[in-house]
Length: 532
Ligand code: C2E
Ligand code: MG
Ligand code: MG
Image (cartoon, rainbow, N blue to C red; front, side):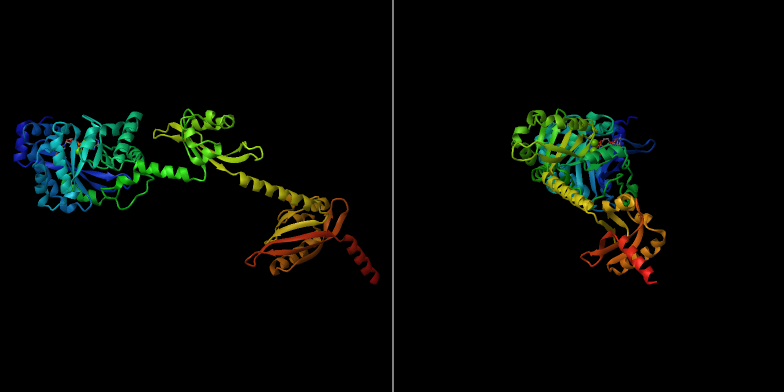
């Protein structure tokens, strides 16, 4: 539907140009950051008419200044329902940036409402800027001096010239909605958005994505480092009377995202500056007590830290651009399968690797290596991140401990006496081989209360009673009971044990031994019979 010039003039005369307010939201927290003001013509019969039907007509016929004044005046009237730090962003036609009267116009429009100019953003599309850049620059500098901020609208379309970005003092970069709409389905769009966001960040600009219609788009934008978003996902252009409801609504937090506090329009882009991230990563890289490198899909070193370079025996610079095979040909066959699997998307951790020593007197080193595929925002593997931990010392210490444990166990097993260990609750935790020789019960079967299997049924109850008393009092245990031997029937044994006490006085374990006292018990029995 087209509206002719007379209608625009009439609309202006009848005070029918009205502002609509589209929410601009901080992607990370879902919190409202402000509104973009979009002009509408309030037609008596046709209702609200979109700007595509009257802006260019107003521009061509010298009416755009009046239109802006009408829109601004009405938008500023909403100031009382716009708490700090919410901003209002106005669209200006490029020609308007050529008028020296513009800053004064904005001041005048804001004056009555008292809306601070520090919370005003002026949006300019690139196409408007090409005519008289010098004049536009002067006006822009004046606007900024007043406190207003400048946004470059629809970036990436039309006369997308990077020249404007450095020629004019912009604070905000608005990514055109044509890239956002295709971003989640089209890799190229996503790459372009990533590049624009990165460009904005490195120029210290706040980035706003336009036309965010789905949560998936918002999530992707947040991941790419974009700060703010606007679009139907966050809210369609609303009328002034709807503002209080929008302002009061709960933040639209993205699924699985943490909310941050204290967002202000300015400076929020700082936290994601790629230069800072790079600097931090570099510091981590250099200081890490771990060898690190990143390989591209052709297994070339894109980066390597000093530690790994030193482990491999060459300076950092020697690796960059070279393949792993070129740099460590001896080790390559052993690690290549892992690298190939990582390139297929499989992550592997703690792969033990024996690194041959260059020094004949030095033993081989032992490394734990992790291979992680690095994915781009489209989920494609773009390289492999490798981390190498030198565990030679730990490995040697563990081996030595294992050997000394084996040695001890061997000695204990060879000991003809039966030795046992019991926990503070009365469960047997270990016994040496002598017990198995005597009873036929191996260590597993003996564990906990399994040893009672070998005890004479008549002796189980008194033995357990005496054992419980010992556990309770903490006094040394001295018990005699019969056990079923493998080859000699029931035999009397004597079990004695003492507790080992921990630093807090608590019993940690009991240790003891079992000896065969069958001959002595028989002698005593015989003597008793004699006496009787
Ligand atoms: P713009 O500044 O890029 O504004 C964004 C446009 O995208 C608006 O269209 C908005 O309604 C639309 N939009 C917002 N979210 C979504 C979404 O999720 N999906 C889709 N498909 N569209 C969305 P609108 O209101 O028709 O405005 C069109 C253009 O007219 C504006 O583009 C701006 O360049 C211009 N304009 C609007 N108001 C004024 C004004 O007061 N003065 C001047 N000079 N130009 C204005
Ligand atoms: Mg705009
Ligand atoms: Mg735009």
